[in-house]
Image (tube, rainbow, N blue to C red; front, side, top):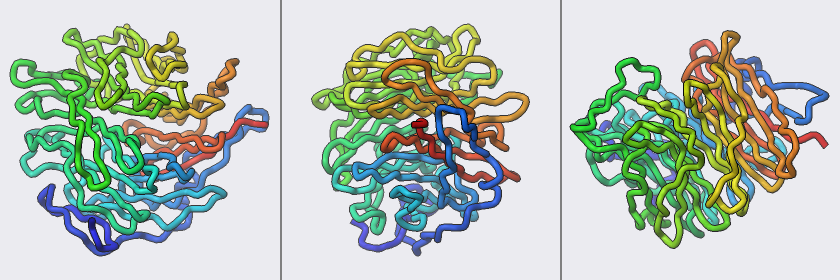
Length: 443
């Protein structure tokens, strides 16, 4: 274990990570731009009550991740530019407007990758250890999208971080990322990711709107999904190829059901059908992937718009963006048997303004979703709550953003004690910052 109290630092070589002087910044006063932009909805007659969630994040923070620890703490991580380097930082929320400490820095370096869609994650396991991953550019990169996945662990609430290990150990200089993480026991985690080790030599773009999207099938193999388990010493086991051909750059997601982890991702057939698939990890082995729903979306490019999954015991919710026949839709499919089967999906939202970029959370009372729309008036954060008891969903426009396009990334949502916590990225005067809201059902 790393015995210093300092954050990890990335040098010019991607695996040369050493300790550097601590950079745990103090919580700043709320930024003026944060107070003025991303205004939350306020409607006394609405079925949902919305309040601002004041964040300790500094100006320039983006690419958030949000998770709930076994002790109820909310873990918020983000990436921030510091000169010519990127820093991965986090803070823990205890409730009642109380943040545990000032933001802490996990790792900082020039090779740490900041990407609007391919973001780091932070997770806490039952032993209260913190786990974090990030992407960094390999020295032998074969493409501008090449990245390796790095993983570290802190046993003492972020005071010390272990020397990181490479999650993908192929050293091919190709693209890896779009990671899912989940607790896999008292002191271990499971991980799944898109793995490009078979794509070396392929030419392809990562833009669903590109007119010249190419993927040279004869030159190299396909993007795959792989998974592995890491114990408290960062030793790996259970390394497996989960799917041999998947969408190149759509995020994966995983949730713990009462029968174990359920992984969802955007699949890819030879006919370029890019629907959502799901698979379970049972007794250390992954099931054959199965479609959540046969949308039949034929797409020659990657839409950079992966699915999200939430679970509460055997109840599972999967949400995703799709556009069969050029008709964009945000869909929600529910399962009562841990994701073995799904009911026909509900179209939560539709239309050309729909951006997708959805995140979903679930508790014993409801399924919560947050997503983005953008039209001529600008970009907005949308939220919906589907009660488990049935009936009409509660939907609101949560915030109007100053930012447009991809710079706003993916909003995140987590539910604790019946309250949804939401965080999103906005762009004001060319600078990113994070804003948040707390949403609860009225009554």
